[in-house]
Each structure stands twice: as C-alpha cells, then as structure tokens.
Length: 624
Ligand code: G6P
Image (tube, rainbow, N blue to C red; front, side, top):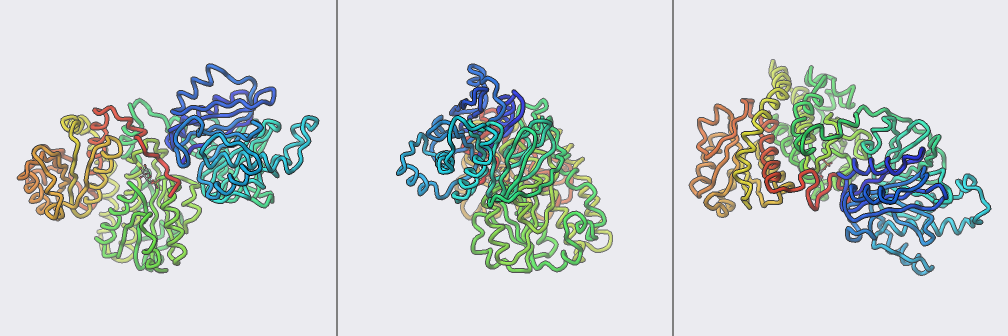
C-alpha cells in the first residue's frame, strides 16, 4: 500500500522522483524518501516521516550533484511504525544497495534470522530491509571483485543477484533496486503489486502507476506478475523470474497529467464530485444501444447468448465499490435475475456455493484491492466466470478476470471515492440493462426507454451539482454533531450506507447507514433531540413507507434532512429538504448520493479535516 517511483536519464532525477511521489501520495502518505547515485557513484539518501513536501524541502537544502538514476517511495505502514527509520528506501550494510518496495514479504522473519546470523545489521523494523541485505548477500556470492571492474560490466552481475533475490521472496512485491557501483541500470520486479514502466526519450521511468510520470511520457509498459525489468537510459529489457527475456508491447495512455491536478478546486474530492456527470457520460457513451444486442460482445466479450445463460450475478467489492455492488443487486433483482453482493473479505465460504453458472462481477476502482483480488481467485477456483468493473487499465484485476468493463472516470485522487462510484454505478446500470434486455425483461419499447432515461442522467447530475451551496449551508449547521444516521429503502438503501461511509471517512464522526424499516428494531433507540438524520426519500414505491419512517424519527426528536424530488417533497414532512431533479426511482441512486457526498465534504471542511488524505486510510488497499 505504498507508491514507488524510479528514474534513469538526465540530471533532473530528484525532481522527477519528488514529482512522482506527490502524485502517488494517495497510495500512502505516512513517510517517504528517495535515493539517487551521484556523479561520484555514491549513494544519496533522504527520508522523512511525513509528507512529500517535507522531503522536497530536505532535498532542496542539500541537493545531490549529477544524479542520473534513483528511486523514491511514499509509504503506508504495514510492518513497523511510520517513522524515518522505517521510511524507504532501505539500504544494505555497505550502503551501496538501495531498495524500494510496495507489498508484504511474507517470509521476511525467516530471511531476517538468516541474515542476522550471517552478520547483517538491520536499522528498521520493515520487511523491506531484508531485500536490501539479501541483495548484498547475492552480490557477494557472485564474487564481485571491487574497484577495477567497469560499472557497465557489472550490470549482468547486478541483474543476476537481483533475480536470485527476487526468487527467495514470498509474498507480494513491486520492487526496485539501485546499486551505486552500477548506476546505468535500475532493476524492477513485480509479484501481486502494481508496477509500470514509462518510456521516454533518452530517459525511462518506473512507478506504481502511470500518474507518477504522465507529465513526462504517456508511453507505458505494464509489468505482469513474475516479470523483471532492467531499465537503462536508452532502453528497457524485460525478463521472467527464470531470467528468460520476454517481449512486451507498450500502450499509450490517454490521461493528461493536468487531469490529475486539482484544477481550481480546494480539494481533489470536490473536483471529483464535479466530474461525475462526465464520468457517467464517458462510461455510458456508445455502449447502450441497442440494449441486449451484441454491443458488449465486441468490447467485453459477452454475447447476448452469454447474458441469457448466466444463472445468477454475484457482486464482489470493498468499501464504496461494495455499495455500488449492493445497488447492482437491487437492480438485477428488480429485473428478476438472481443477484448477490458481498464484501470481498467475507466471501470465502460463499465462493464454494457460487457455482459455474454464475457471473461474478468484481467492482474495483483501482483494480488492485487485495481483498477483491483474493475473492476473485476463490470464485474462479470454484468455476465461476469473472467480469471486472474497474477504472484502471492494465490493473491486476483486469488481467485476472475473464471480461472487463472499464469505467471511464479518469484518475481519482481523493481517498474517499466519489466519481469512481458514479462510474461504477453507470457501468452496473449498463450491464443490468443489457442483461435484462437479452433475457426479455425489458420488452417492447422498455429497453429503449431504459437507455434513453439513463442517457439523461449526466444532465440531471449537473442540475444536482448546482445545489452545492444549499447543501453546504445545511452541512455547516451540523458540523459540530458527533452522530449521524442515514436511512433509506430499496435501491437507495446502499446510498444510505454510502452517505454514512463518506462522512465517517472524511469528517471522522460516527455515522450509521440503515434500512429505514429496520430502525424500529433497534437504532431508533439512539435518536436524541436534535440528532441529524438524513433520509433519502425520492418518489417511487418506497416513498410511502419512507415518509412513515421519517415521522418516527421526528417523533423522537431527530432533525431530519430529507433528500427528495419535487413530487416526494409534498409527502415528506422533514425539518429541512434537499430537492433533486425528478428521475425514475430505479435511477435515483445516481443522483441521491451526490448531496450526501457534498454534505460529508462540507462537514469535513468545517472541521478542518484533511479531506483528500483522511487519517488511517489509503486509496488503494493492497493488503488483506
Ligand atoms: C479503500 C478506499 C475506498 C475504496 C476501497 C475499494 O478503502 O479508501 O475509497 O472504496 O478501498 O477500492 P477499489 O479500488 O477496489 O474500488
């Protein structure tokens, strides 16, 4: 759950590394560091406990001279507290070898004992440091005779030592190493953690994801599990772990580096909230009509006959993506298609029950969430086919799934997911529409109407976003509340969960999302005078019961904020209203979640929370 960067080329090494680390901070941000080889082939190393800004300052105070290769790292602690000692890069005893790593080395204790016994001195509590010492050991065993050897002649030795080191590791790693005696080559390896190579002109890059080097190049090569890269200034060679050379194709990434910047908004989260109409539009474009036809076959590989044949649909995901899965379940069930939704980390036993006929839909913005990947592997082992809904081209999930339906949201930097959620919902509505039409559940003109209504949603999202100031005012009145309750029913019940999750994540307050009908079975007891209750009550079949549940909450003193549309507003008696444009109940989650995101944002803003990087959280969770 860390970000790594690497660079080899001109003399802007530390600038490139720091710039990349800034863009990767969403992957973890409790400490960071960089290392480079200077013009005298000595190792330059700077690390801080804290953010990249502090590292930048440190480097500016004592700049490196003539560095043309280096690696950087931003960390989210897994082994060892977030401290300077535990910050990467880690070095060996000689101070010549330096390593950055994302992932977990499962056999590190065993390796560490062995290395300690042979005299190695450890300076950190991390699992990563064993890699540096192991590499030192392998270099020694290859019997490198010091000074006389030209650095380029050492490249095969460095490569072989690195390859053998990687061979001893168990667990997950995206790894890069530099050896100060061999500054013309940077080595990288991947196993269960993301790693990409960026191809420049007379310079090359590596990183955990492309946003780190998009400013310099859009040409990238995705490493697969079990692959190594030897990165030189003038080219990159790829190998498998056995040392056999492999050919790899590069792809050109369409994302623009300014797309990953804040563009005038105070926080990425707010910017991303405002990008939601576009995210939905881009995800739907060209993929809807004719519903149930073969449109998914060409892009995803699922024919109309496939859609008819699946016995059920099983959603798997974590966090916000799980809430998208829950909406998906309601949607598929609405069309009479058996559907299930589980948090990936609780899937284990159900995997065996999923069966060969099911389509597992794994939803993940990053495509790298360890729990989701693990659950997918379990589902596959039970014979199910897997469709990935993800925002990340080339991510592990895409490579492990049978089918991929991309959301087209652009990079999401805010840790709390917003536009990626809308993109996931759009993809799920798209999929549900095709399933329903292929199975005769949207007869006559209904399929066309479904598609047309869905295509109107981006404009309605824009209209909803115009309510930002009004929602902000409501949020500010509650900014000192310590407890929030979010309630709804049916297709909006997952939105109540998502509203509660958003405010927990970024404003650090206690919040619960509950099915409104279930309140009377317990949660109503926690309601006190003035407690904020956010009730999602658009028009539709759930409205009448919702109106009753709102009354129950009010009778216990709740200060109810009702998310309504002009028609439902007439039926609901709340203390305050947020009125959204009218849309059919089935599509309403695509709108109702937006005021809840904005609400959480402004509560967090009033509380001066670190909105884009909430405490204890990380954007991409690559540990189980
Ligand atoms: C982390 C993030 C959440 C996200 C979840 C799943 O917990 O903080 O915002 O919803 O991971 O991420 P994924 O990339 O799989 O959608």
